Amino acid sequence: MAHKQIRNIAIIAHVDHGKTTMVDQLLRQSGTFANHEKVVDTVMDNNAIEKERGITILAKNCAVTWQDTHINIVDTPGHADFGGEVERALSMVDGVVLLIDAQEGPMPQTRFVTKKALALGLKPILVVNKVDKPGSRPDFVINAAFDLFDKLGATDEQLDFPVVYASGINGWSSLVEGGQGEQWGPDMSALFNTILDHVPHQQGDPAAPLQLQVSALDFSTFVGRIGVGRISQGTIRPMMDVVVMEGPDGKAVKGRVNQVLTFQGLERVQTTDAGPGEIVLVNGLTDIGIGVTITDPTNPTPLPMLKVDEPTLTMNFCVNTSPLAGREGKYVTSRQIWDRLQKELQHNVALRVKETGEEGIFEVMGRGELHLTILLENMRREGFELAVSKPRVVFKDINGEKCEPIELVTADIEEQHQGGVMQALGERKGELFNMDPDGRGRVRLEYRIPARGLIGFTNEFLNLTRGTGLISNIFDCYEPHKGEIGSRKNGVLISMDDGEIFTYALGKLDDRGRMFVRANDPVYEGMIVGIHSRDNDLVVNATRTKQLTNFRVSGKEDAIKITPPIELTLEYGVEFIEDDELVEITPKSVRLRKRHLKESDRKRASRS
Image 1 (cartoon, rainbow, N blue to C red):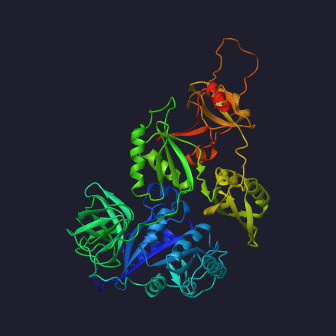
Image 2 (cartoon, rainbow, N blue to C red):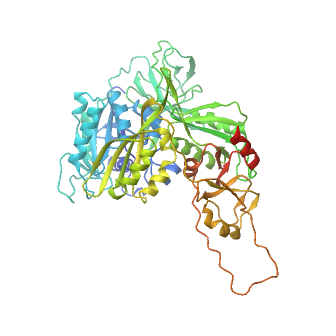
Image 3 (tube, rainbow, N blue to C red):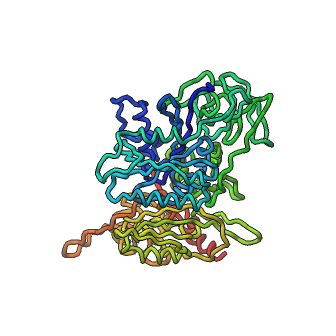
């Protein structure tokens, strides 16, 4: 296996810059798919939530062969909330392909993953994607990428990066610019050849003691837990005795490898041996986890455990105690929720879970709202039923001073909405540090803002920009506490009774505010049924029915007019609630409720 030519690359990009489409094209043009196998869906986004949202959540591997060279491709998430996935993926590769939209230029998540890659000493290849789009500006993108690398502390060698122009959706790439509206290159060969020329091949010794760090976990009902990682040195074979070590000073557990598999296209194929540089899947070892080293028992050479950034956001996951609990979910007890969170910890390295002093309440910490809401979405699809609290930031004590996480925010908006967005971000303690009009009616605002100020801001931002704005954020650093930030401006409408909501009741409540519920939905005392038009909470009779008497007035009765309700999604609910409220999540429903269902309990809690 020593002579086998191998290249390991990660493709990193901001959300929606065309990364997954590009991977599909590389798979097709390397001969992984026959001509008749035209894949309509993007191949790598095979998770149900990834397909629905069009984003990459989990780092995934595939491999292609080009000119007798085996190229392992790792498709990494573009969102900073899934940074734990990014850091693990980068530990397996020797080079990165940085994909940037030819119109938008480098974005915050691009900055995040690029900083990680440069710190690891990886040399980037810049791919300017979507150059055939109207309004593309490749020269601007290349200059902006150079400035970004320079700001992030790139070495002179890293700043001397190759540039490839591409159109992922049309399947071509080129090393030179062409004319607008033309096809600049015949196929993806320019990108393939650039990878072969600029990504270093593995230098490890196949005869040295085995050293394989596990960067990802998979599971099979047939063989149990599967470890995925790159071999740094040595050779691994099936039925080989090894030792699994948690870093140089951690515990060591002996075991025997069952099967060794490598990636070929999207398939996993068994192999008799694998050497340095290969990304392999290993099963048969029970005590395997993220970051451990599989090494030689006679001459162990463990690598340090993988480090990931600390979580910045925390939420309480609680047992569902509402009157409607247990109607839709299959798993509803605290033990089942705890076991599911422990299972998640085995592969979600950026997550932290701990028990609280209260029965049935667990504190879950993650990278951001999206990181935690994706976990909740997966749980509800599996049949779990639970309630969650408002997200809170994780404060740190640095040199005796209370510090909080600060985020870098990039907002791409139309100029007419600039005033409202700047005012809203200013109220949330945001500090503007860059403003860049594009000369075509849009402007890019860059802010530094406390993470607390972004909780619940997405919906307000979409309203302020009439749905035309793009916003993204990334963790920057911890800074001293910035003071109080205003909360939600409107109060809520709270049901005073258990029962079913009727059209008649909705008609009577229509002028009080916007509703979350429809006719015939079940409601209970303490459930939030709508947003009040004023700033105070209001307890309302949501189960009111029309009195059926034989008394009739002359003239036709007015038809009941009802404003359509707000579509209540998991993300909207988590962003909307305040500290004294919960989101009730079941496989079929998302409801909002007060933490204390009875009004007397709420008054008592507000006084204490």
